[in-house]
Length: 147
Image 1 (tube, rainbow, N blue to C red):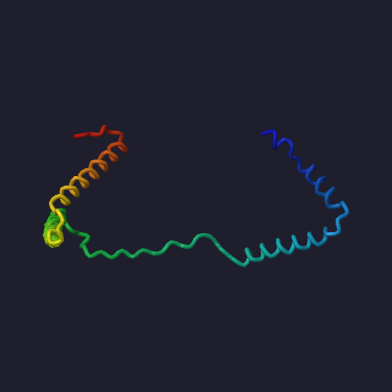
Image 2 (image 1 turned 60 degrees about the horizontal axis):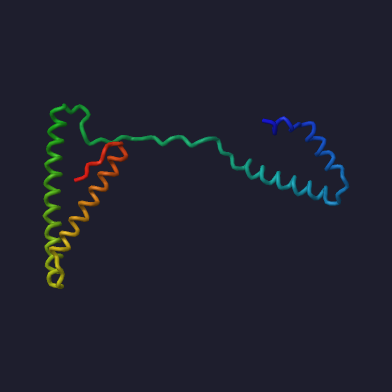
């Protein structure tokens, strides 16, 4: 707080007048350049013409669902969607297993120990899952279960 006690507008005006009245051959040039620079900056800002934040966009809601559906209809639709999701997940799992079979056959044809590679990959995935579970438990402040 002592810093602000030493600052005085009267003292600042006296210091400015003392420096300004000292003989300096560049005084008027410096003042002219300063005035031009200040005028240029303010003229650029003046031409911007911003008037505040833009208006928010209008939102048009499009719904394909009937707003007067009953709870039973909603539950039936959710059950049907879940069955479809499960069916698609099963199809994807089957496709993934076929791809794995192709890579297993390619690995065996190349002379690799595919079973060892799969065991190592499974152990690595399990370790990553445990580490992730431990990280989440630590974030929640819960004790970590170690097998």
